[in-house]
Length: 108
Image (cartoon, rainbow, N blue to C red; front, top):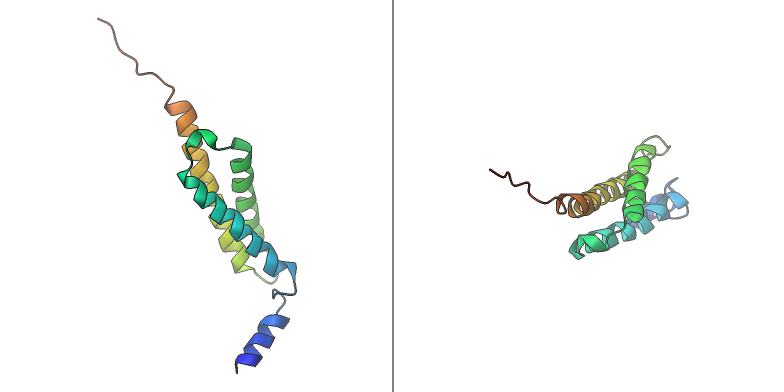
């Protein structure tokens, strides 16, 4: 029973012998590294890096539902990349623009 399931996974069109299996696996590493960066101060974050992570996540989360066979591992990791990228960009933008604005004090 277990050997037939293992053989079915091995010979699946999105199995370990194809890039459809390994590409999401490496993307999980990028997502985990981006989650680890939640602890970094916002001034150390990079706009280009976070824009690329967000864009890649959005594009591939859409594409993963169009290709055959549907690659739900690629979809989930890409969605995770998009969400963490948006969160990091929000932190960076808030730090760079919202914290610099001095409060306006009306004089009488």
